[in-house]
View: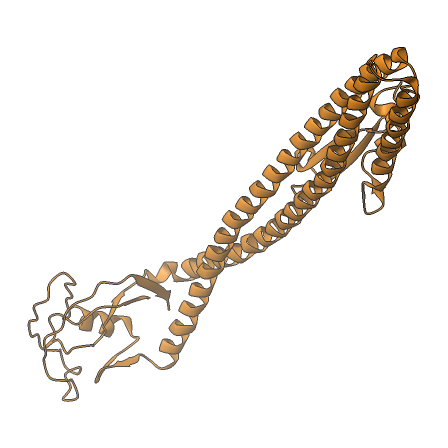
Length: 322
């Protein structure tokens, strides 16, 4: 039979305050075994699904961590590009001054000296801008560095974001930057053009790095949101399994005890007798009034508490298979 535990107050049974009742209904005996098997299958499926969700959540957590690491890596590259841009801005100013006729050749030599120092500074920035030993701005020894970040935790192509950072070396910024000088007005004029082109290139590289950063930040946020959603689903699955396990435990206890004692009278596990008893009990959770009904023998008992007023409460029910 199916035993349903309901939280309520006996409404029409000389209703004593605080007494809870049990409602029962018979399940077709021919289907009892089938129902048990189906319930067991559903419970096991909940556990299996929860396990699969746990694996997926772990992968998403890993993807989130990777995306955040990637964003930090690109932040280091961006910081290096900011320093390079500052050096180039100073080189532009020096070239602009050096091409002016108001300065002598001696003064241009001074400008050229600082120009060279700033050029060397760019090389130094490229060499020291690295993460875990990997230089981020040298193009991987070529024109472009490629970094892959698995942000989805899976093996599909959409689970990976591939970042490409163009070289911010002197050659990568402009082919003439390594040899430019300010010794003459003509040289200074040419050097200014070269530096302006290098600035444009640096800004372009920085723009690409920023776009990749936004993509990685978005991937981390998405992974966190999906993991949270799946975490809720997993918890629901496990809660369902726990409720089913508790139901079977209580049903077994009732069967072994041949019923349960409830506030001075016993409700038997026997379906026919139980139903005969329940037919005499009606509960109206929306009605606070009580009416007396007499329990059928042998369930009348002097141990039943005296009648008293009680407010009815409504609550959800949990079904147990016995």
